[in-house]
Each structure stands twice: as C-alpha cells, then as structure tokens.
Length: 158
Image (tube, rainbow, N blue to C red; front, side, top):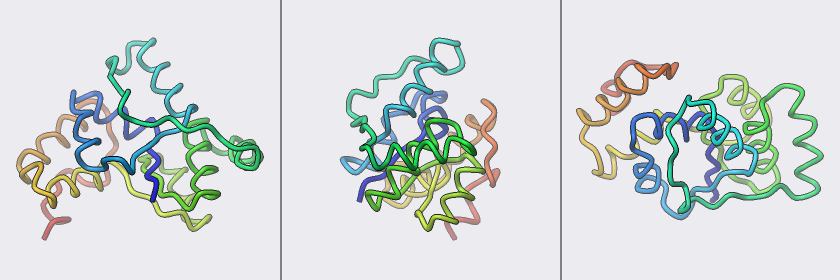
C-alpha cells in the first residue's frame, strides 16, 4: 500500500533534521504528490523549513480522474492535502497528514490516515528509536509549532 506524505509530515521531520526517519519507518511504501512537494519547496524558499534531500521519496503525479477530485477538494483543502486525498481515493492508498481538515475529510471518504505521531510510534515499535528519543523529537517538533494531539507518546505505547 502506498503511504502518501503531505507537507505537514514532511515539514515536521525536516524541521528537526530527521527526514531520514521517514525513510526508515516507511521505506519503499512512502511517496508524495507534486503538489505536496511544491508546498514544501515554497516553505524552503520562504525560510520556514530547511532545504531537505527528498530524492529517495517518489513524487507522484495526479491522473486525469484524480485531477477531477483534486479540483473539488481544493475548495476545502490546500493543494498538497487535496492531491494526497484525491490520489488515495483512486489508488487505495493511505495518507499521512497532520492537517485537521484533511483528516476529517479523509474519514468521510473512508481513507486511512496517520501522521507524525503515528510515524514516531512506528519508529519506536520497530526499534529505530527509543521512547525517550521519540519523545525528544516530538518535543522539538512542538517547539517548531507542530500542533500535536499529544505531548508525549508514553500513553500511546502502553
């Protein structure tokens, strides 16, 4: 199954200098859309996120049918989230986003969703990070403005 990463997740890991963890957690199942990557690059140009090497991450283009749904979703979402949801709807993919509106719409569309916290939990479960390391990264992300649903991962890993 394809795991489509939107700009919010890409940015959270880029801001703490650990984009490598996305590759470790998701491997070859991870991808993004041209729209989500364009949003990330705009963030780099504006100085909001650091330039990051995403050459390992496939960037997928919307099909004509996906573009139709994308145009509809643009009425409610930013381009990156709209593209990820449109693609997920047509390709039975999962979306990784921290955007509240995108998550709510994904639920309505019956698209499986996770996000930054889910990736951190996976990294602990597969032994790439200790709980302490994952909590430290979450704390750093919070310091950069990430609006996490939790302050620590402790209760989620019990």
